Image 1: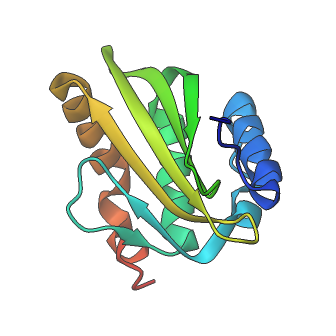
Image 2: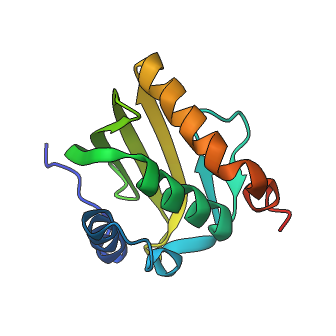
Length: 144
């Protein structure tokens, strides 16, 4: 069985994402996220809709994580999705997680979902993000 590969249109977006992570700069995020994209947080029940919400969350988490590193990746059979395994720490709590990213036919991110473990790392992440995003509810709900 041949390993799956990401659709060609998504490959530049994924490369740009890795570059943003490496440089700690989310400046190019708008170019790789679809207008109707959605972010699914490991600490929120309701998804965050829209490019502005995705940019806000990913920019903020980039400031919160320490020692962030990707380890492995897995591509879906249809080539539209990739799972990136990562490790990081937040306020001294180590965590492992995955970013599940789905791309549209044009290579734009339409869904970005994060899962994190263990609970201590998830709790530290939730507290750090809540402290920084408390005043941004309108952006996160798509009301802004």
